Length: 272
Image (cartoon, rainbow, N blue to C red; front, top):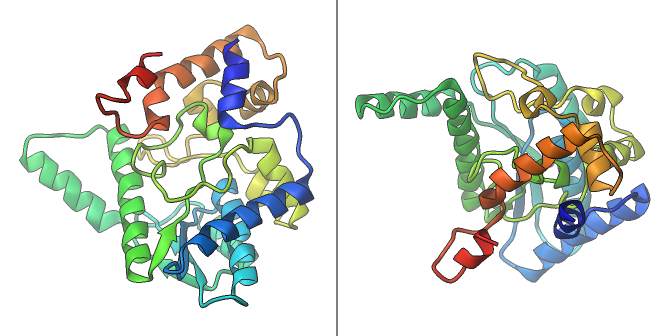
């Protein structure tokens, strides 16, 4: 049964103990860092949404515990394209996380220059494709910061996002570690509530906000299925036939996003 295969692959759980899960994620971040003496920073883009707020808070908590062992910092990166529409939420997320350092990189000039350069080569991107350009520029900036501070880039991908492939390949889908892997949306909300996060940051409608023609487009509208249904599916519950079909269709179509670049030795994994 495909549902069970997906659950096993994404390592999702039917329920979590928020305290235990929080501890496990912090310990995972610490154990990775402890393997590599060169790591002096953890770098993460903060948007003001649920996922980056949660991941940022857990990274800062891990770094706070690691400081007794080594010189290390958590760097929260603001990455607006021009003026961010939910600027207040991002400010509130930063206040909740209390990061060691905040760096702001406005990606607008870089993205617009890239779009114009492509146009001169007779390549015109759609608004949707430009959104992916923004996501990749954000990740590029984070890797530049990580390189300059001897750090690693943290990703916010989790099971409810991974199952649908709702991220940009080599954009927000590219990072060194994914601490939230295995969690679904409601579990992430539960951990933020446990950590004392302001409710409006995890109760707001999730949005990638990459398209200028559709600003603040809710993820659930773009996907055509609710996170409630996705979370139920990942917890092994029964969902209605239409939701199941959409979830599994997204999963099958985006399989390539969950794999390393294909070689002639790994092609069999793609066509299974």
